[in-house]
Image (cartoon, rainbow, N blue to C red; front, top):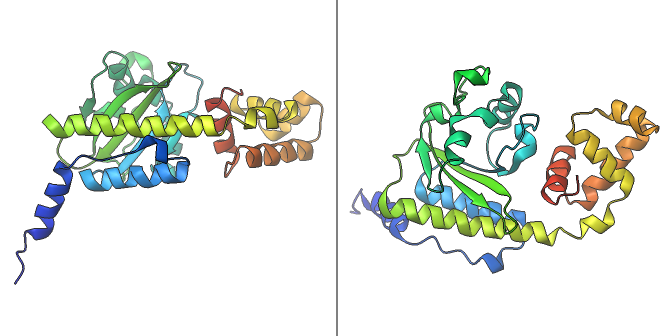
Length: 247
């Protein structure tokens, strides 16, 4: 008869092994997503997120997201609440290069002066703890990487291993930015204009009036820009265009 503790022992042994990543071998976001899922599975987290560090209040949370398995309803709520840029998590990350850990309160406004209501904690994140690090691209653009789950707070060697793993995964992500840089030459000036106005919160009808073209033509520009940026929808196309500094 097999020892009933064998599965738990195997998981513990795997968690103590280095999470090996070869950044040069990762070429697509799909491969990176697979690695992120392996990482959270090995270390007992449920969700992951990589996003640009907020630099201005007018930027929507969903437009900052680069890679995530957060539930869509949770992303929508942070968009509506506009609390991420004033959160305790962002405030603490701006003051340290070390990992930041804590519970659901990390996603609350850092100060009552922020004037934003606390986000109602949805079931997917209620009671979860977070492990977050601040990372920078080669050109100095700041990003935040967050792992979330109900497990105990990482400590000691595991904390260092997670930091290194996220650093390596972020390097993989930056390589995918470079791989898509050819889109700079492919996008037309009209496609860039439509993406820029959409990022500013304008609807297709408003963009049509601003540019003096029909809403149908605006929709066509979005479809072609989305295809050229290898995105699945308008929101992802805007995010990728911002990542590549096209808008």
